[in-house]
Image 1 (cartoon, helix red, strand yellow):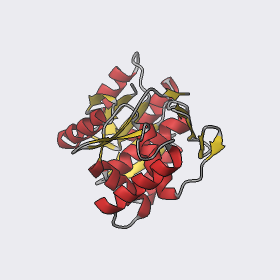
Image 2 (cartoon, rainbow, N blue to C red):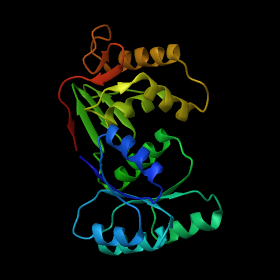
Image 3 (cartoon, rainbow, N blue to C red):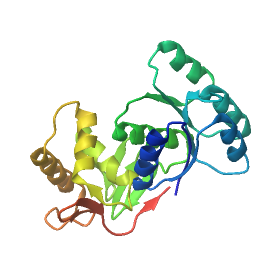
Length: 228
């Protein structure tokens, strides 16, 4: 289970972020000040940090510098300011990415997963019931033969690969497809994409083993999986 270090002084934002991250299978340690960040970060192991730029006793840039000197983990800045100077400063200080408030939950999770993959803290190869997914190179194979997916089909598959132990709700999948397509995606469209994906990765699409339906909720992965 990946550990997130959250540095955010707004309690309401922090509360919502913690809830979201827990739902995605992360554990979260939260602090609200620069001083608390310094004292808790050393001596504890984290896989990624979410750091607000504006803190009551300092700023996130200094926190990022301290973290990178102590242990090089991905740092994503949370900022209410969209000005170019803040973004450039954060990246020059060693930040791996930034996201401007208010942000969509799915976009934040996607950025976290991307940063973890780039840093080597997230599995890049996934194997499951004859299905092989190389996330780094975007390669999908079924029983050794390469499978070609559309952009939205691949995005849909990555949601399952990224949360292999979770039940994925239809609402979450709709959000994911919306982010990827940039246009409205409804329930009927989602059903069509699930059907198409199953036709490409399942041995028997009519009796799926990989993407299982959870009635009234959504879908989940079936069987055991291996990640590397």
